[in-house]
Image (cartoon, rainbow, N blue to C red; front, side, top):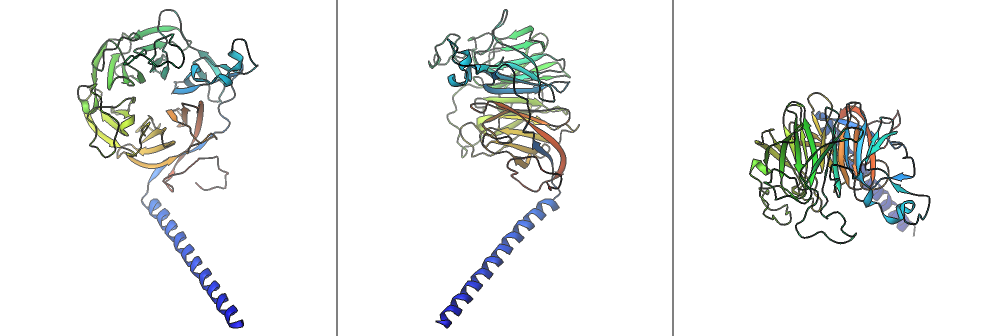
Length: 418
Protein backbone atom coordinates (compact mmCIF):
# COMPACT_ATOMS: atom_id res chain seq x y z
CA UNK A 1 0.00 0.00 0.00
CA UNK A 2 2.81 2.43 0.91
CA UNK A 3 4.51 1.67 -2.38
CA UNK A 4 1.30 2.43 -4.31
CA UNK A 5 0.78 5.71 -2.43
CA UNK A 6 4.35 6.76 -3.10
CA UNK A 7 3.95 5.89 -6.77
CA UNK A 8 0.73 7.95 -7.02
CA UNK A 9 2.42 10.85 -5.25
CA UNK A 10 5.32 10.74 -7.70
CA UNK A 11 2.93 10.63 -10.66
CA UNK A 12 0.98 13.64 -9.33
CA UNK A 13 4.17 15.60 -8.72
CA UNK A 14 5.43 14.76 -12.19
CA UNK A 15 2.12 15.76 -13.82
CA UNK A 16 2.09 19.04 -11.89
CA UNK A 17 5.65 19.71 -13.00
CA UNK A 18 4.71 19.09 -16.64
CA UNK A 19 1.69 21.42 -16.36
CA UNK A 20 3.91 24.12 -14.88
CA UNK A 21 6.47 23.64 -17.63
CA UNK A 22 3.72 23.85 -20.25
CA UNK A 23 2.32 26.95 -18.57
CA UNK A 24 5.72 28.59 -18.51
CA UNK A 25 6.14 27.71 -22.18
CA UNK A 26 2.79 29.23 -23.10
CA UNK A 27 3.50 32.35 -21.06
CA UNK A 28 6.91 32.61 -22.68
CA UNK A 29 5.39 32.29 -26.14
CA UNK A 30 2.83 35.02 -25.36
CA UNK A 31 5.54 37.30 -23.98
CA UNK A 32 7.72 36.63 -27.01
CA UNK A 33 4.80 37.41 -29.33
CA UNK A 34 4.14 40.65 -27.45
CA UNK A 35 7.83 41.50 -27.59
CA UNK A 36 7.91 40.87 -31.35
CA UNK A 37 4.93 43.20 -31.87
CA UNK A 38 6.53 45.91 -29.74
CA UNK A 39 9.93 45.41 -31.36
CA UNK A 40 8.33 45.91 -34.75
CA UNK A 41 7.59 49.46 -33.64
CA UNK A 42 3.93 49.49 -34.64
CA UNK A 43 2.14 52.50 -33.19
CA UNK A 44 -1.58 53.14 -33.17
CA UNK A 45 -4.07 55.56 -31.61
CA UNK A 46 -5.59 54.39 -28.31
CA UNK A 47 -9.18 54.88 -27.19
CA UNK A 48 -11.47 54.39 -24.22
CA UNK A 49 -15.25 54.41 -24.33
CA UNK A 50 -16.98 57.21 -22.42
CA UNK A 51 -19.83 55.27 -20.77
CA UNK A 52 -21.55 58.48 -19.59
CA UNK A 53 -21.90 60.08 -23.03
CA UNK A 54 -24.26 61.36 -24.38
CA UNK A 55 -26.64 62.59 -21.69
CA UNK A 56 -30.24 61.30 -21.66
CA UNK A 57 -32.62 62.90 -24.14
CA UNK A 58 -35.42 65.16 -22.83
CA UNK A 59 -39.17 64.84 -23.38
CA UNK A 60 -39.24 61.02 -23.14
CA UNK A 61 -37.54 60.99 -26.55
CA UNK A 62 -35.79 57.89 -27.84
CA UNK A 63 -33.85 57.09 -31.00
CA UNK A 64 -34.50 54.49 -33.67
CA UNK A 65 -31.88 53.18 -36.12
CA UNK A 66 -29.06 55.74 -35.94
CA UNK A 67 -27.72 55.78 -39.47
CA UNK A 68 -25.46 58.82 -39.76
CA UNK A 69 -23.02 60.95 -37.74
CA UNK A 70 -21.03 64.08 -38.56
CA UNK A 71 -18.94 66.59 -36.60
CA UNK A 72 -19.04 70.29 -37.48
CA UNK A 73 -16.41 73.03 -37.13
CA UNK A 74 -17.53 73.75 -33.56
CA UNK A 75 -17.12 70.09 -32.57
CA UNK A 76 -20.87 69.66 -32.35
CA UNK A 77 -21.96 66.11 -33.10
CA UNK A 78 -24.87 65.62 -35.52
CA UNK A 79 -26.80 62.40 -35.96
CA UNK A 80 -29.78 61.30 -37.99
CA UNK A 81 -32.06 58.43 -37.00
CA UNK A 82 -35.26 56.72 -38.11
CA UNK A 83 -38.15 57.25 -35.74
CA UNK A 84 -40.29 54.86 -37.77
CA UNK A 85 -37.97 51.98 -36.81
CA UNK A 86 -38.91 52.22 -33.13
CA UNK A 87 -40.96 49.24 -31.99
CA UNK A 88 -44.57 49.73 -30.92
CA UNK A 89 -43.88 48.87 -27.29
CA UNK A 90 -41.03 51.38 -27.13
CA UNK A 91 -43.34 54.25 -28.01
CA UNK A 92 -46.65 53.83 -26.21
CA UNK A 93 -46.78 57.60 -25.65
CA UNK A 94 -47.29 58.21 -29.38
CA UNK A 95 -50.01 55.60 -29.78
CA UNK A 96 -53.62 56.54 -30.49
CA UNK A 97 -55.01 56.65 -27.87
CA UNK A 98 -51.92 57.39 -25.76
CA UNK A 99 -51.06 54.16 -23.93
CA UNK A 100 -48.44 55.34 -21.39
CA UNK A 101 -46.12 58.20 -20.44
CA UNK A 102 -43.21 56.75 -22.37
CA UNK A 103 -41.93 57.15 -25.03
CA UNK A 104 -41.77 59.23 -28.21
CA UNK A 105 -39.55 59.20 -31.28
CA UNK A 106 -37.10 62.12 -31.17
CA UNK A 107 -36.94 64.43 -34.21
CA UNK A 108 -34.83 62.88 -37.00
CA UNK A 109 -31.86 65.31 -36.81
CA UNK A 110 -30.20 65.77 -33.41
CA UNK A 111 -27.28 68.05 -32.51
CA UNK A 112 -25.13 67.49 -29.39
CA UNK A 113 -22.35 69.53 -27.85
CA UNK A 114 -19.06 67.99 -26.69
CA UNK A 115 -20.46 67.43 -23.20
CA UNK A 116 -23.26 65.31 -24.63
CA UNK A 117 -26.07 67.83 -24.19
CA UNK A 118 -28.78 67.91 -26.85
CA UNK A 119 -28.67 71.47 -28.22
CA UNK A 120 -30.64 71.24 -31.47
CA UNK A 121 -33.28 69.12 -33.19
CA UNK A 122 -35.39 69.26 -36.36
CA UNK A 123 -36.31 67.32 -39.48
CA UNK A 124 -39.13 65.52 -41.23
CA UNK A 125 -41.50 66.33 -44.09
CA UNK A 126 -41.98 70.00 -44.99
CA UNK A 127 -42.82 72.43 -47.75
CA UNK A 128 -40.70 72.50 -50.90
CA UNK A 129 -38.81 69.23 -50.54
CA UNK A 130 -39.30 65.46 -50.40
CA UNK A 131 -38.19 64.04 -47.06
CA UNK A 132 -36.77 60.49 -47.49
CA UNK A 133 -38.99 57.52 -46.78
CA UNK A 134 -35.97 56.07 -44.90
CA UNK A 135 -33.30 58.70 -44.21
CA UNK A 136 -29.66 57.63 -44.37
CA UNK A 137 -26.43 59.51 -43.70
CA UNK A 138 -25.75 63.06 -42.53
CA UNK A 139 -22.87 65.39 -43.36
CA UNK A 140 -22.18 68.92 -42.14
CA UNK A 141 -20.01 70.66 -44.74
CA UNK A 142 -17.27 73.27 -44.35
CA UNK A 143 -19.82 76.06 -44.76
CA UNK A 144 -22.04 74.64 -42.03
CA UNK A 145 -24.72 73.25 -44.34
CA UNK A 146 -26.37 69.93 -43.42
CA UNK A 147 -26.83 67.25 -46.10
CA UNK A 148 -28.83 64.02 -45.87
CA UNK A 149 -29.62 61.08 -48.13
CA UNK A 150 -31.98 58.14 -47.94
CA UNK A 151 -32.40 54.51 -48.91
CA UNK A 152 -36.15 53.93 -48.67
CA UNK A 153 -37.73 51.72 -51.32
CA UNK A 154 -41.43 51.88 -50.56
CA UNK A 155 -43.55 54.74 -51.90
CA UNK A 156 -44.93 57.11 -49.25
CA UNK A 157 -48.20 55.78 -47.86
CA UNK A 158 -47.35 52.11 -48.45
CA UNK A 159 -48.98 50.09 -45.62
CA UNK A 160 -46.59 48.85 -42.96
CA UNK A 161 -45.31 45.37 -43.74
CA UNK A 162 -46.20 45.55 -47.43
CA UNK A 163 -43.15 45.13 -49.70
CA UNK A 164 -42.31 47.86 -52.23
CA UNK A 165 -43.14 47.41 -55.87
CA UNK A 166 -40.54 45.30 -57.66
CA UNK A 167 -37.54 47.42 -58.67
CA UNK A 168 -39.00 50.58 -57.15
CA UNK A 169 -36.81 52.94 -55.10
CA UNK A 170 -38.43 55.97 -53.53
CA UNK A 171 -35.38 57.76 -52.14
CA UNK A 172 -33.71 59.09 -55.29
CA UNK A 173 -32.76 62.46 -53.79
CA UNK A 174 -30.32 64.42 -51.63
CA UNK A 175 -31.42 67.29 -49.39
CA UNK A 176 -29.45 70.33 -48.20
CA UNK A 177 -30.43 72.42 -45.14
CA UNK A 178 -29.05 75.12 -42.87
CA UNK A 179 -28.12 74.10 -39.34
CA UNK A 180 -31.50 75.27 -38.04
CA UNK A 181 -33.34 73.14 -40.59
CA UNK A 182 -34.13 75.68 -43.31
CA UNK A 183 -34.41 73.92 -46.69
CA UNK A 184 -31.84 75.01 -49.31
CA UNK A 185 -31.69 72.51 -52.20
CA UNK A 186 -32.82 69.12 -53.48
CA UNK A 187 -31.06 67.00 -56.08
CA UNK A 188 -33.19 64.22 -57.62
CA UNK A 189 -36.85 63.26 -57.29
CA UNK A 190 -38.58 60.36 -55.53
CA UNK A 191 -39.11 57.24 -57.60
CA UNK A 192 -37.50 58.70 -60.74
CA UNK A 193 -34.15 56.89 -60.99
CA UNK A 194 -33.29 55.29 -64.30
CA UNK A 195 -30.24 53.46 -62.94
CA UNK A 196 -26.54 53.94 -62.36
CA UNK A 197 -26.00 56.17 -65.41
CA UNK A 198 -28.89 58.56 -64.70
CA UNK A 199 -27.29 61.94 -63.96
CA UNK A 200 -30.49 63.65 -62.77
CA UNK A 201 -31.43 61.32 -59.90
CA UNK A 202 -29.83 59.25 -57.18
CA UNK A 203 -30.96 55.80 -56.03
CA UNK A 204 -30.51 55.17 -52.34
CA UNK A 205 -27.64 57.65 -51.64
CA UNK A 206 -25.81 56.36 -48.56
CA UNK A 207 -23.26 59.02 -47.60
CA UNK A 208 -21.98 62.40 -48.77
CA UNK A 209 -18.71 64.33 -48.65
CA UNK A 210 -18.14 67.96 -49.63
CA UNK A 211 -14.68 68.81 -50.98
CA UNK A 212 -13.68 72.27 -49.74
CA UNK A 213 -11.05 72.74 -52.47
CA UNK A 214 -13.42 72.20 -55.38
CA UNK A 215 -16.76 72.82 -53.62
CA UNK A 216 -17.92 69.48 -54.99
CA UNK A 217 -20.49 67.14 -53.46
CA UNK A 218 -19.27 63.53 -53.65
CA UNK A 219 -21.93 60.87 -53.13
CA UNK A 220 -21.71 57.15 -52.35
CA UNK A 221 -24.75 56.15 -54.43
CA UNK A 222 -25.36 53.56 -52.98
CA UNK A 223 -28.25 51.22 -52.13
CA UNK A 224 -29.89 51.06 -55.56
CA UNK A 225 -27.07 52.36 -57.81
CA UNK A 226 -23.50 51.08 -58.09
CA UNK A 227 -21.43 54.24 -58.31
CA UNK A 228 -19.83 57.39 -56.97
CA UNK A 229 -21.35 60.57 -58.39
CA UNK A 230 -20.19 64.20 -58.13
CA UNK A 231 -22.21 67.45 -58.22
CA UNK A 232 -21.50 71.14 -57.72
CA UNK A 233 -22.31 71.75 -54.03
CA UNK A 234 -23.90 75.17 -54.68
CA UNK A 235 -25.93 74.58 -57.83
CA UNK A 236 -26.44 70.81 -57.79
CA UNK A 237 -25.15 70.58 -61.36
CA UNK A 238 -23.91 67.12 -62.38
CA UNK A 239 -20.16 66.76 -62.99
CA UNK A 240 -19.12 63.08 -63.32
CA UNK A 241 -19.64 59.54 -62.02
CA UNK A 242 -17.96 56.15 -62.08
CA UNK A 243 -18.16 52.56 -60.84
CA UNK A 244 -15.63 50.10 -59.40
CA UNK A 245 -12.08 50.41 -60.78
CA UNK A 246 -13.22 53.62 -62.50
CA UNK A 247 -15.39 51.65 -64.96
CA UNK A 248 -18.70 52.89 -66.28
CA UNK A 249 -21.18 51.53 -63.74
CA UNK A 250 -23.26 48.54 -64.75
CA UNK A 251 -26.49 47.40 -63.07
CA UNK A 252 -26.21 43.78 -64.20
CA UNK A 253 -26.96 41.63 -61.10
CA UNK A 254 -23.77 40.14 -59.68
CA UNK A 255 -25.36 37.50 -57.46
CA UNK A 256 -24.30 36.90 -53.89
CA UNK A 257 -20.76 37.71 -52.79
CA UNK A 258 -18.46 34.69 -52.70
CA UNK A 259 -15.04 35.26 -51.07
CA UNK A 260 -13.52 32.57 -53.32
CA UNK A 261 -14.50 34.35 -56.53
CA UNK A 262 -12.21 36.87 -58.29
CA UNK A 263 -12.86 40.48 -57.15
CA UNK A 264 -16.09 41.83 -58.62
CA UNK A 265 -15.58 44.34 -61.43
CA UNK A 266 -18.52 46.43 -60.22
CA UNK A 267 -19.63 47.66 -56.80
CA UNK A 268 -22.27 45.69 -54.96
CA UNK A 269 -25.05 47.40 -53.03
CA UNK A 270 -24.59 49.31 -50.95
CA UNK A 271 -21.74 51.58 -51.95
CA UNK A 272 -21.71 52.86 -48.40
CA UNK A 273 -19.16 55.68 -48.05
CA UNK A 274 -16.90 58.02 -50.01
CA UNK A 275 -14.36 59.99 -47.94
CA UNK A 276 -11.68 62.33 -49.34
CA UNK A 277 -8.33 62.59 -47.55
CA UNK A 278 -6.30 65.78 -47.16
CA UNK A 279 -3.87 64.57 -49.84
CA UNK A 280 -6.63 64.11 -52.40
CA UNK A 281 -7.40 60.40 -52.31
CA UNK A 282 -11.02 59.26 -52.28
CA UNK A 283 -11.73 56.13 -50.20
CA UNK A 284 -14.92 54.28 -51.18
CA UNK A 285 -16.63 51.64 -49.02
CA UNK A 286 -17.74 48.71 -51.19
CA UNK A 287 -19.47 47.13 -48.23
CA UNK A 288 -20.70 43.68 -49.40
CA UNK A 289 -17.46 43.11 -51.35
CA UNK A 290 -15.43 43.59 -48.12
CA UNK A 291 -13.18 46.15 -49.73
CA UNK A 292 -12.08 49.76 -49.87
CA UNK A 293 -11.28 51.14 -53.32
CA UNK A 294 -9.16 54.28 -53.63
CA UNK A 295 -9.52 56.85 -56.41
CA UNK A 296 -8.37 60.28 -57.42
CA UNK A 297 -11.18 62.86 -57.30
CA UNK A 298 -11.56 62.61 -61.10
CA UNK A 299 -12.47 58.92 -60.78
CA UNK A 300 -9.08 57.48 -61.72
CA UNK A 301 -8.56 54.17 -59.91
CA UNK A 302 -5.53 53.95 -57.59
CA UNK A 303 -5.73 50.74 -55.52
CA UNK A 304 -7.93 48.53 -53.38
CA UNK A 305 -7.67 46.54 -50.19
CA UNK A 306 -9.89 43.59 -49.24
CA UNK A 307 -10.53 43.32 -45.52
CA UNK A 308 -11.91 40.29 -43.67
CA UNK A 309 -12.88 38.74 -46.99
CA UNK A 310 -14.82 35.86 -45.44
CA UNK A 311 -17.36 38.28 -43.96
CA UNK A 312 -20.71 37.54 -45.57
CA UNK A 313 -24.13 39.07 -45.03
CA UNK A 314 -23.72 42.78 -44.33
CA UNK A 315 -20.01 42.88 -45.24
CA UNK A 316 -17.06 44.29 -43.30
CA UNK A 317 -16.55 47.79 -44.78
CA UNK A 318 -19.35 50.06 -43.53
CA UNK A 319 -17.84 53.51 -42.96
CA UNK A 320 -14.49 55.22 -42.42
CA UNK A 321 -13.06 58.29 -40.72
CA UNK A 322 -9.51 59.63 -40.70
CA UNK A 323 -7.29 60.40 -37.73
CA UNK A 324 -6.89 64.12 -36.99
CA UNK A 325 -3.12 64.46 -37.46
CA UNK A 326 -2.29 66.55 -40.57
CA UNK A 327 -1.05 63.49 -42.47
CA UNK A 328 -4.14 61.45 -41.52
CA UNK A 329 -1.87 58.49 -40.79
CA UNK A 330 -4.72 56.25 -39.71
CA UNK A 331 -8.11 55.16 -41.02
CA UNK A 332 -10.82 54.10 -38.58
CA UNK A 333 -13.07 51.50 -40.19
CA UNK A 334 -16.52 50.75 -38.78
CA UNK A 335 -17.26 47.05 -39.31
CA UNK A 336 -20.90 46.42 -38.43
CA UNK A 337 -20.81 42.68 -39.15
CA UNK A 338 -17.75 41.79 -37.04
CA UNK A 339 -18.74 44.52 -34.53
CA UNK A 340 -15.38 46.26 -34.37
CA UNK A 341 -13.54 49.45 -35.18
CA UNK A 342 -10.38 48.58 -37.11
CA UNK A 343 -7.41 50.96 -36.97
CA UNK A 344 -5.62 50.93 -40.33
CA UNK A 345 -2.27 52.47 -41.27
CA UNK A 346 -3.30 54.54 -44.26
CA UNK A 347 -0.14 54.34 -46.38
CA UNK A 348 0.09 50.53 -46.24
CA UNK A 349 -3.63 49.82 -45.60
CA UNK A 350 -2.54 47.31 -42.92
CA UNK A 351 -4.86 46.69 -39.96
CA UNK A 352 -2.81 47.51 -36.87
CA UNK A 353 -5.35 46.73 -34.17
CA UNK A 354 -9.11 46.58 -33.57
CA UNK A 355 -11.45 47.28 -30.67
CA UNK A 356 -15.04 46.48 -29.80
CA UNK A 357 -17.24 43.40 -29.56
CA UNK A 358 -20.87 42.50 -30.03
CA UNK A 359 -23.24 43.48 -27.24
CA UNK A 360 -25.33 46.15 -25.59
CA UNK A 361 -22.93 47.59 -23.02
CA UNK A 362 -20.79 50.73 -23.52
CA UNK A 363 -17.89 49.93 -25.83
CA UNK A 364 -19.77 47.05 -27.45
CA UNK A 365 -21.69 47.27 -30.72
CA UNK A 366 -24.87 46.07 -32.38
CA UNK A 367 -24.37 46.89 -36.08
CA UNK A 368 -21.92 49.79 -35.78
CA UNK A 369 -22.92 51.79 -38.82
CA UNK A 370 -21.31 55.24 -39.05
CA UNK A 371 -18.16 56.86 -37.68
CA UNK A 372 -16.72 60.39 -37.36
CA UNK A 373 -13.92 62.17 -35.50
CA UNK A 374 -13.74 65.57 -33.82
CA UNK A 375 -10.85 68.03 -33.72
CA UNK A 376 -9.46 66.39 -30.56
CA UNK A 377 -9.28 62.98 -32.22
CA UNK A 378 -12.24 61.47 -30.36
CA UNK A 379 -14.33 58.91 -32.25
CA UNK A 380 -18.14 58.93 -32.47
CA UNK A 381 -20.07 55.89 -33.68
CA UNK A 382 -23.72 55.10 -34.40
CA UNK A 383 -25.56 51.78 -34.46
CA UNK A 384 -28.43 50.71 -36.69
CA UNK A 385 -30.99 47.90 -36.43
CA UNK A 386 -31.76 47.43 -32.74
CA UNK A 387 -28.50 49.09 -31.68
CA UNK A 388 -30.19 52.51 -31.78
CA UNK A 389 -27.47 54.56 -30.12
CA UNK A 390 -24.57 57.00 -30.35
CA UNK A 391 -21.25 56.37 -28.55
CA UNK A 392 -18.09 58.36 -27.88
CA UNK A 393 -14.56 56.95 -27.66
CA UNK A 394 -11.99 59.22 -26.05
CA UNK A 395 -8.65 59.61 -27.81
CA UNK A 396 -5.82 58.63 -25.42
CA UNK A 397 -2.80 59.34 -27.58
CA UNK A 398 -0.68 57.07 -29.75
CA UNK A 399 1.16 54.11 -28.27
CA UNK A 400 2.68 50.74 -29.11
CA UNK A 401 0.38 48.03 -30.42
CA UNK A 402 0.30 45.19 -27.90
CA UNK A 403 -2.92 43.45 -28.98
CA UNK A 404 -4.34 42.75 -32.41
CA UNK A 405 -7.82 42.51 -30.91
CA UNK A 406 -8.32 44.78 -27.90
CA UNK A 407 -11.91 43.82 -27.15
CA UNK A 408 -13.98 46.37 -25.24
CA UNK A 409 -11.86 49.46 -24.48
CA UNK A 410 -13.28 50.14 -21.04
CA UNK A 411 -11.82 53.09 -19.07
CA UNK A 412 -8.62 52.16 -17.26
CA UNK A 413 -7.28 53.34 -13.93
CA UNK A 414 -4.19 55.57 -13.82
CA UNK A 415 -2.11 52.57 -12.72
CA UNK A 416 -3.29 50.32 -15.56
CA UNK A 417 -0.88 49.80 -18.48
CA UNK A 418 -2.19 50.05 -22.03
